[in-house]
Image 1 (cartoon, one colour):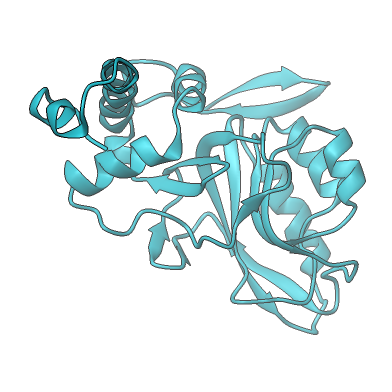
Image 2: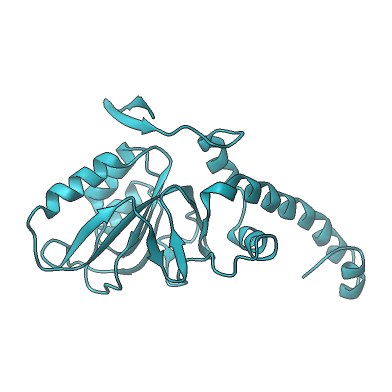
Length: 235
């Protein structure tokens, strides 16, 4: 793993295992929509569970995120010894084009993400966060950082919630998210794509988007739905 300089700090630069760069993968995913990716995973790979819990919603409807999962596990906990140091180490481990995915063990009380966490994540090249609770909402919005969350809370995590470990497999609803899996989120929710098939899924989803141009043209022309289906379309 190489390093690059950004704002005077070193960042990890992950090598791509795909025919294209990680940066290009990310940009092309952002041109898709999650429904197309879900259809590819369900029908081509028979993956019935790939969507993260539906409660995760973008802080603003126009927000989209894409990148490789940087996984974090934490839960309600009143102990504080070493917690801040672990949090700092996690932030230093973030890499370019990562998306932070938090398994918060069902916490509904505390905010695990705020203004300063956003600042640190941005400096590391992180592209977004999936998190239960947020605070400092206005400051997050001003930094144009995509966040998908469940609730807002002014209660910080220190002394109420702690991070246990990071970059290990986590369970998000029905979905096991491995470090390095691809995370893609838009107005319809968040989906996880296994790292090994992420490029092939991208190509297949791009084909769906391209084919839907023809289907829309058939519908707009006045063709009956049954005729659209006979001509290879779908609804």
